[in-house]
Length: 228
Image (cartoon, rainbow, N blue to C red):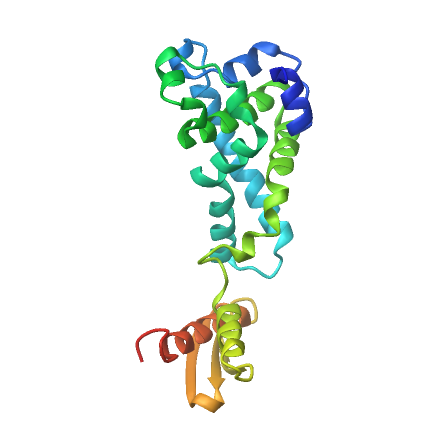
């Protein structure tokens, strides 16, 4: 089995200068007073920022709501637990007798907390850039699958896929109106599915948001997809 130092070097690409930080990050409160609870607090913040940065750079067309959903998918407790399990962090944890007997090294909440704590320990050991690099290494394998997460796809994508599955042509979008000053414009867009005689309208602070809102209205009118 890998030592904790070898584990972090191989799995996260980081070598600790202060072994005590790593030891604390891998220690559950049931096994000692110097445990990962405070480090978890730091790591949670670092992971959230790293995930936000990664999503912002990787999805330049996504709006604020979409970016929030992408980030939430990366840093959710279940997602972090899954990543931690894949990295084998459970084998590195120091647990008290009760937690050992109850299978604490496989418990999702403990796995997620521990990976946050390790990132927090890296932050204290070498600063934000080192912690950020480890966090990005953690998240990048999941990046390509983000758009496939249920509920994350935007309305235009969902509408297009639904129409294609029914053998129908793509919807037609148009900008019906633009108002306001150049730096503060407001858009009204329409979305039509002509073979079904469906039309929806939406508004937003840019063309994309207005079209997304219009697509959402059409989705709600599609037979079998929502209220008509």
